[in-house]
Length: 228
Image (tube, rainbow, N blue to C red):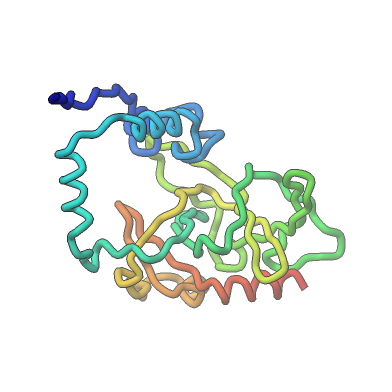
């Protein structure tokens, strides 16, 4: 008895993320809530459809050949960071420092506390966090924004943990998690202002952004010192 293998069925997946999402013109109203398409149920549903589709022998052979290839230096993205903007500066910190992202909130000032960099406290989900101004700590003018573009901006609170203390860091815009090759990190430009440059360990390039990589240990030390 012989069997006939039918060709895999074609599943029509609507890739809205490439049209109105993060890879498109970013006009999707859901982005305000979800920040990135990967957090949206529409994206998750499309991924589930894609994973459930039948595949043919040629597809399996192509991918088997792909994964047999030795990785080049350019493919070894061995590090990750969270990219955000303060003023006009795109900056990043290692993803391991962050707990979650929350909507922006106005901090309540603390009486008799006027430490440079401590904006007050914010309530996030019933928990109080010290709200720390990276702009003040890094000497960045946060009243300056990017030139007008066709993309939405998303001011957010980044909830981070350093040793045993949690902090809320307000940012003007959030790009998201970026994986990169540590070998691709470049030295900071000599033109960067001195207040910021001493906190940088390097610079990475992504699309049209030059992203300053903040020193995790130094930032953590400064946050703890400011809170004392």
